[in-house]
Image 1 (cartoon, helix red, strand yellow):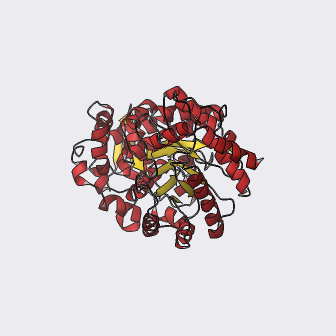
Image 2 (image 1 turned 45 degrees about the vertical axis):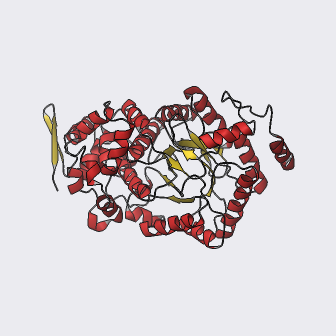
Image 3 (image 1 turned 30 degrees about the horizontal axis):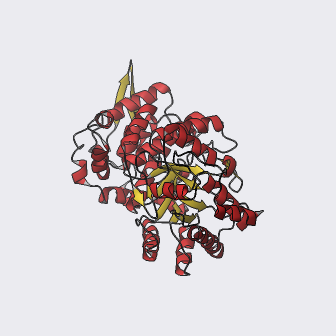
Length: 463
């Protein structure tokens, strides 16, 4: 393995290998400090960033941060690397890649063509030398479109996951939250529930209830119960009406093992969902969540910084052609992202890297109550992500998840972002909202002023 060095002023900084160089170049965050990987000073971080900018991209194919023989994610990254797509940028350094990405030649078509040739480590490296405005500009140019019962990721649109969680999985409480969300135009990405009681019978009960709601009102969306992938496979085997298969994933084999998964299991789950043929406009059937710090929290990071580990998870996601991917950016806690500043930067990094790799990336704009962050920070991140072309965000009553006990974005927040930034819902969902008289033709939500009769009856049944 090569060592690296860079001189700043009269001092030369040494970095023993690519793994250390990547870690030291990472913008400051509490997780890397906790792991003992962070730069000791701002000057050392700048030296690492300058050394990183000079590295040729070809080096990332020859020097792996986790050895090929030790990790199936490393093997996936190398074995599925598209050399033809890489050819367009193979002559560049990390710094050159940044310049190309920011240039006019890197339009949506060019970025889509080169995406299979970019490895997660290349994406992570270039993100480490980019400003926030750079991350936004390039992500905005990336266009990733996926389909199941509607079309996600089109230009000028931002979808939402309607998240009607309930601390006891009460059917009436869930239904009330679903109704509330639909009246604000939320739910085109997915109606997705984190079950309070996580077992196969409960999964079947909830997914059946959601299927009945979607069918009754002919809603062009999809449902998902965010349970372990093995529960979803079992539910499919018992005849449950499963739309999307969910799983949390990470960027190392050991971290995925801590989740009880591997690549073979994810492939089995995808094949099971595809066999149901429930999609009407497409067959993207997987939904993945990621988050910086997951590998470190499982002691499965191999000394790799948390942002690079996170980006490696996107190789896992890319393998299975998901409908949706999102980073739960502030959910793991301040041990990994200490405050609003770190959460904002991480959210934009995650979105940029995933889009660069060709993924339909959304973000759970969130924080835990013991983080040094508040809703003003989330307003900033939401607005920046909307500007950057984020695929979807969360919609939760009052932005307070009463089951998972964290703060995220509300139905109102998503409506705000769409109005301010001129964004729309998925086209099929937009047409349904207008047909139901939830939205008027000028894209303003009616917000109950002329509630559809069918919804009036539904609301009456809940009260």
